[in-house]
Each structure stands twice: as structure tokens, then as C-alpha cells.
Image (cartoon, rainbow, N blue to C red):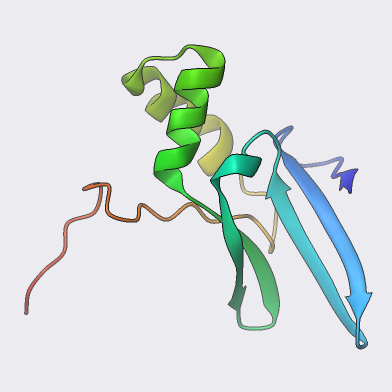
Amino acid sequence: MTRKGNGSKFMKRMSEEKDGLDCQVLTADGFEDAFLGIGAQFNKLIAVYSYAKCLEILQDRDGMSQARAEEYFSFNVQGSDVGDHTPVFPYLDTGQVETRDD
């Protein structure tokens, strides 16, 4: 893995060619324990991380409060747009997203 020069300091690029397909995935540095897997969107691959686990990592590793972890993560990690392969951080049953029963 090599660091992407023009993106967030938290993102790393994994790149390989498999069966003639360019498989590039950006990973969130320091959040390996929150990694859920790889998702596909159209013709690109995207790393998927647990939002709740990322916050837990910031609280445990960096001693942040819940509110500080949410603010920091939202701005510095989740808010980093580093191109087509920017990782996603779904909320997965955290109560962060309201659902409708239509």
C-alpha cells in the first residue's frame, strides 16, 4: 500500500490488477478494526467501514469523548473526499438514520 499524495492523511491506496481489471481501493488508515469489507458501485470498488466502530476506535485509542469523536470523524475522515474510491462508513443500526415505514 502506498499513501495517496493529494488526499486525506487517513487514506491509503491499495492497487492491483486482477484478470485485466484495475482494482483500486482506498483504505482508512488507523481504522483497520472497523473494516467490514469491499463494496462495489458501478465499475469501482470501495472499502466499507463500520461508522460505530470507527467512533469506538477514536474514543479508545485517542481518549476522545463520544461528541468529540463524532465531530472529529465527521470532519476529518468521513468528510474527506479523496476521489472515486473514497471509503464509505454506513451507520448500521446506530440510530443515526431515521427510516420510514411507507
